[in-house]
Length: 409
Image 1 (cartoon, rainbow, N blue to C red):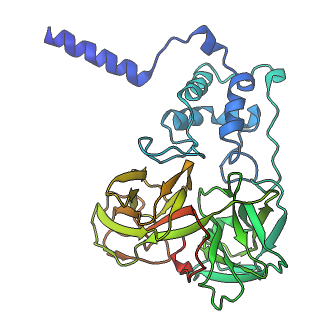
Image 2: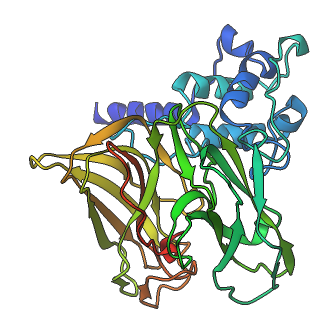
Image 3: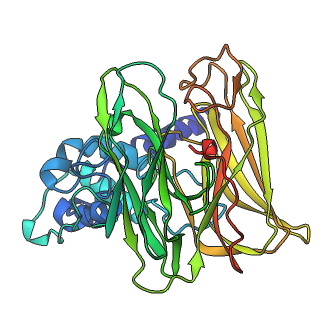
């Protein structure tokens, strides 16, 4: 009896691993034009098209078909589209995850031969503005051209570009594009308001890092650029063996209707840490307390190659608490802003607590050197612990305070 039970268990496990061998009539009728293209157009082609960051295009059957088996693997394992938030905490406006129905459709398409289907059933291809994911900008600003050496370490560059604005402008979408993306690790553009005497005085406008989406705010929300402000580009270059020249540009779309909510972004960070050599799960904490009531808008955890996991928690004045975002498997290659489906009210006195863990052991295949202790630093072989957080104040935003832009990406 025990042998029979064991044999039955093995058969069931094999069936679960290999998947069903029989396909239904409906599965056999799944085609690219009718079933799969709508999914790709809705969820994938923002990145998977010519000139974007993904390695191949999914706009057409001819482009997608050679990648069918790889697509099946990535979709089945939920590696694509990339999304690292724990679904038990929070609902997100920009959630990239595919529904189970969409996953089943893609798997059925591949498993039944990845057929093209009737070209007449292909939906209209999405319209994209060449070079811009936000659409055609109302205005662009470019930093001066930079020469990036083939080798060595390049310090952060801080490049100031005047706006020459005669009146305040409100930005509802912003995107950064670099002419030599292969050597650009990250870019942050800050608004340096009139009267600021150093580059360290400014508010974040928009950032770019691997996997980060452009800033596109919901209706009624935006960022303010006061008249007479400068834009300060913080650029981190990482030489890759080939000398290059780069011109980095930010594109802006301005509000066409009144902006009621000014979005503010600040880092909740910890710089005073030292991760011991070989430590597999080193914990670092940071916190920020609201002195005014506000509405939370989005989060973006940031660490480097030893980053393991990251959690945001709100501790309210009445002593209750709520996990806002949990990223149990942090991926340095995907700097995702997690935009809340609905803003969360935080009364004055609410404390935001961030907890991160780092793997500085040989078990971490991305670890540059497990034999060395690691401290805060700008370069990728060093570490950072930043809980970027965006919000809007319920009342007028406080006056601009000095912000250390080295606490960027």
